[in-house]
Image (cartoon, rainbow, N blue to C red; front, side, top):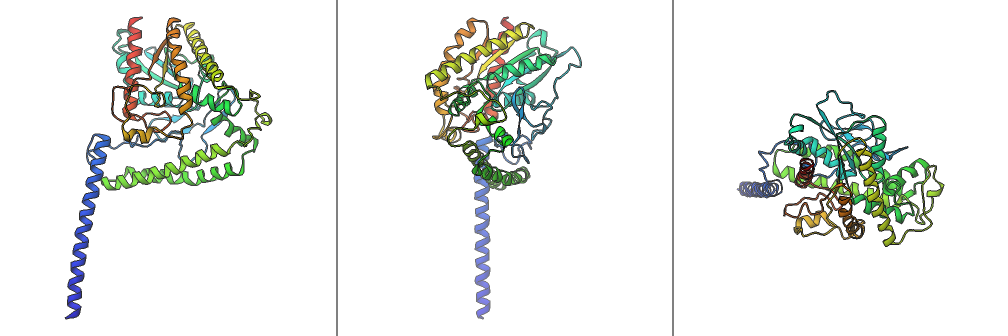
Length: 438
């Protein structure tokens, strides 16, 4: 009799546990369904399968799966990305180290092709990718009768961390190898103030390529990395192989709860990866700031960092002059030039950030905050003068002011698909209206 009572109690316990597990599962599934809908404005079960990692809510900027360091030193441009496959369908890092479907120089196969070159840093690179995928500018350009039947070809000449004079140098190099352009877009501003500020701290001339990118590569070439930097590099190599399987598992999820947990797991892996990148950046230079002069590569250095006021005045003047030179070079070939000052969260406008977006887009320890606050007002002050000198320039810093949706994907400068759409619309409106008026 006693075993029978124990058996009955065990049955009841299993039944209650099973009911609780089902209720827990339904609650979790329902919760993740709601979160997914609020974030993506669509039901999880009817979503379109996507290979676009940005659409999955992942920021893989600067991450090439399977490789620890994706940049390579370049004798003219400072550095480029190593040619190889890209995580986006139909894209690759091409023969010149830019993310594009095409190798360069791109030769027109017929006279109906209309080639647009895009120059700048990672925001410009992301813009090129988004435009190729979504054709925002192409659609608007075809409102112009002369361009109605043109085949629009967008060539990205932009790479993460590029700042003037790299855009100017890349433009002239590409023209020298007979790369044809019908229109050129230069998207910049953030790297000029934020990354040039880093150069100054390292006593590297602000017009040299980004110290954050170039010094790590030169120290690898010189075999002068510190032990702590090498340890961080080892951990980066250990984390990298875990990313691709985690992404595949996320894409294969059939339940919202699976997607939620896998997404959290992947975000933690990415967070750990980026922390190791930050450690690598922190330890890759000697604490006394010396060693640049002894490199096998020659850098322009200065005896001490420039004072803040002098630094940002020089950066601003350089930004203005390099834009003029790009315009003049292209004007000689009758090629329209468009300069876009990119929006950034650390330059405050009338936009109100939600609490959720503040957690994504703001960091109290941001290395960019002060540089943007100090540098952007000086750039903006020059815009009317640039317009007076017939440069087509758009001050896009307020382009997100009319939306309450989340538009940033990190605490640096990059935009999610909502932000990319708004930014692309603003750029397209400016270019098309300017062309129509002219």
